[in-house]
Length: 527
Image (tube, rainbow, N blue to C red; front, top):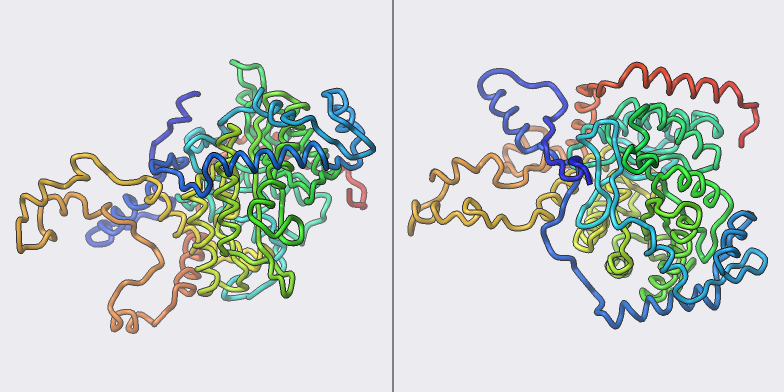
């Protein structure tokens, strides 16, 4: 590992500084409370729900699925040939695996953790181990805010969320398809999305996976962005600068689109998150143990395939498991069963020795209401307690992922900030033990004016930028606004104060030259 893996430098908040008197003090407090680290390194234990026997049973069941039932690799002759050469039983598009084969392939070469490099090295993230990386939500065709309601997303919305993510100290990653800009052609919009991450943020980002050619475009744009820093002189391989979401088409199927994108990224040494996307009861059994076994089997097959393509290419075991309403069939979020699946899968990933992706701020609510808050909290807390390394959908998720909410984004960023404090654990330093304060105050007095309190009050407790803890009278005098209204004002303020991070003009020119040439080569038809 290089020095960036233990990077702990703080970043000053992006925005205008107030000057003089009370405003200066307020700005100083804000600066201290908004300091950030490039990723979280947890200092609390993992929460476990199964013992050794239970985890072993699920691992055996996953091997049984791989051996007896198998996985379909559809419309990809190269994938089938790779499996056949490796010793798998290939009949048509169905691949069955000798017991333990997929696990052995993964453990032989997949890294336990890896760096994803950002164009600003201060924002490099280490994915795996005891680290947690928060990224915004992904994939919504709609956006919502208080002013305009629900509408189709545009590239302006996409850029707005990239900017808001860049300004959010509790988010470490720019994400990927934060929302789907439907005002751009399907076959060209990936250029604008990837460029927005490169231009308007200097945090790490995700690439396009909706066609192998779009994956190749992402790799070429990343080469232009990083220039002579793209190759690692120590390994002779490309640095991992992009991470990408490869979903299994559950149950037990990988299609040609995902396989094609996975091959492109694997050969370029870019990271892939192999995620079975499961609505339990429809795409897996209704039970936690059955869903976990199927998820592990699918993920093992996908990660092993990546290692066949390029041994050592970074992979992440992904799990997205939601329950459904057995009355309507609609997905449900914030319920206990998906949390149990998450806890189990996190433990299985640690046993396998690969990073783990899951969780976030998931909800089924259409607006940023109490349902959204409770369901999101019931997803984010298990995410952090269970030990998720890469958290997709941390902020903005509404309507089961169909909508990206501006106000919801701000509310979720606040929750993510609280998780930083939770995962930091208990301060057991001399200052944390605070015996000097207890000695100074003694019985029957208060701690408000003691030296220890005065020295620590600025950073003693997490300070939310949108909650209101004032008296009823003050709240009423200030307009009786609820949290959604306050969040609405905050995202507008942040966008008004946004300043883009500097981008090397030569890199910018190289990226745009590639994009313009590629766009000009397209016919009117989509690919």
